[in-house]
Length: 418
Image (tube, rainbow, N blue to C red; front, side):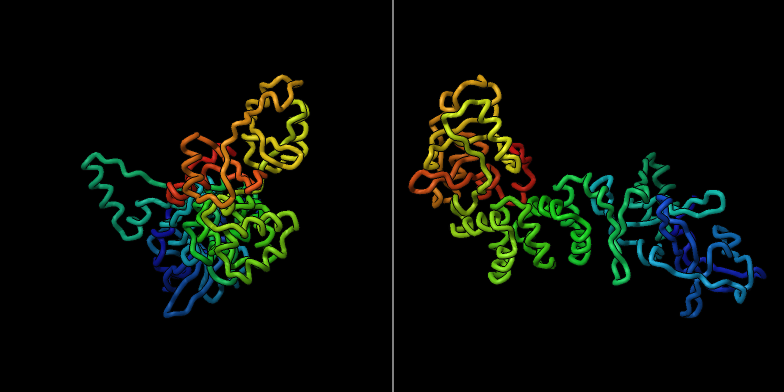
């Protein structure tokens, strides 16, 4: 095994030992049937001119001088294709996504391995040793570490666990959908926060709308707005439809008024109506931070009937630890938890096991008042009612605590009630 940094800049000679130039780069090609790129060609530089030589014309790559099998005039033409990757130009010092560790890392070196005459890119070196190797201090550092009985760890990532971010107009982001599907939305959000604006756009394009929506809900509203800025209106509207109504409303409030209206008009009617309703309330009021995704049942049905009703009406609701009870005019009259429902006698009426002492807030109550209520009574969510005591939505604990806990910290709290 060898490293790319160890052979870069080496002298290249032809069959007779005549000077051809210096090794400027290696070209590897990604094949669908092989998890690791295969080195296909060398890029040789001489006096500003570059020559691409097929790897099949190389007799010895890792000798002190790289030796070709033929004279320079006999080198066949190498046909470049879209799958080709220039290892030094396109990979070294670039950011890559480690889908196994769910992080963005910098490529310090590449490990090469030869198997049956074929040269593969086996691992990505993202550790300190890769940097030291490139500046010629690896052996010196190892000797010092050995004398001090220190262990210098090497940090490698197998190529099949990385996704290459490509930068110019001829390159694309290669992130298989199955790799992203395995990542938690919080991991996706962390990756997004580490990327440049250009890379972020490519990364978002590789994700489906559900994944984008879940990831956006893990970051601050200002960052959400910057991420959605480059999306076309149709895709942005689709993403907003997948977000919780309160998150979508907060995001729309951060966008320019004209675009916000345009996106709402493109959304499905039910989702658009919810968002429009939320946008009518002051930003820091209970109405401004509530979500309209909540579950209600009437008081005069049995526990068994309530479970059936919830299966039919609340399948898409994420916050479902509390179920609210309303009368025929939608006045809030009670609440019970899913635990209460599960342990209730199947024939017991909801009115018999619900709690009629419901803590509630008004749509215009200040967010700080909501947070105080949530913390005082250790609530996971609190219902929001209008002046007629008709339920309008709920405020979840994390949204209520936004005033007490900084947003950056709040987004890292486990959403255990979902």
